Length: 401
Image 1: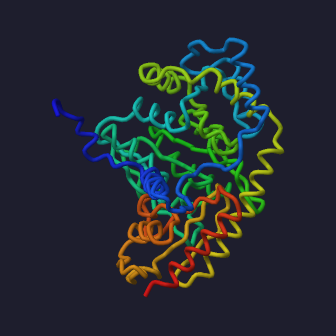
Image 2 (image 1 turned 180 degrees about the vertical axis):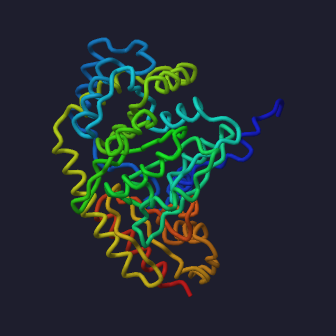
Image 3 (image 1 turned 60 degrees about the vertical axis):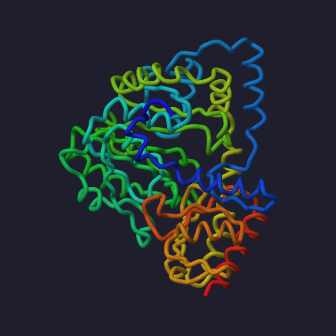
């Protein structure tokens, strides 16, 4: 093949979530009955009123190039959402709309990072944070979150990994993959550490903010510590809470100069988000809250069922998630054994692949999120399917020796 490829791609692995979903699809294409718990995608339909808003937008001619940073209507809806739900006031020039939340991260990192800069990422992490940072020559630095702390980020651990080279600190609570939720006190203590580093940007990924359980509450660092707001990018979107993953609409609020730089990046990459999808997102944000509350209650019930079932399996531990729609069981007690088909389980990746190929349940190994030996299971599917999946996992482990 003629030509050369970028050196960046040589060390850029595919996201493990997508890789396991690909393996599951391949087995399903061969006729296998696969239960896939690999992707974090709601099984609910997009609310009908949201779909109708998109339909009307198309009929009304909203089919032209949109503004790079978002339509005025959606930016106004985002501003109302931030004020109403997060006690954060952002002007239109401090808001931008992107092709999903991932592009917000891409824009922010490309606009600010130089070779050798450090990006602090709590572990376990969503796979894209360190991958995107590495693409731009930055160095991911990991702050360990422990199962015994409910996988919450502790200020002492954050302080331990901060250096003069730190340029970003990522906060993702409620967390993917663990479902951890930081309390207000946690956030206040984290803010105390960040005050000692005035040149550090803060990315607060709050995409799961509405999916919290057991009376827990999600806290925005920019609201808890208003003095840090001029350094915070508050990221959110409509994919998880409104079951709109395929609409590809994310958004962010942040300091005007940084938002302008991020918009410049986007203007030279994808330009603006589909105007019809933006109309749908505005309808979702301004719509009734009862649909989101119903989804959250459903996820809470599913989470409890899955965690209780996993805890009954010898060799498996599982913290009770306080948010999002994942379970993150530890499988250290299952390693060093052989499956019924004779495979040696040395790592959580071995376990995940064997579970998929022998029991036909797709999960994601915890090593993909920076902390092994664990698995991430999505609870965003029906209780009948989840019961079947847990039963298959129990039988798989039972037959290991």
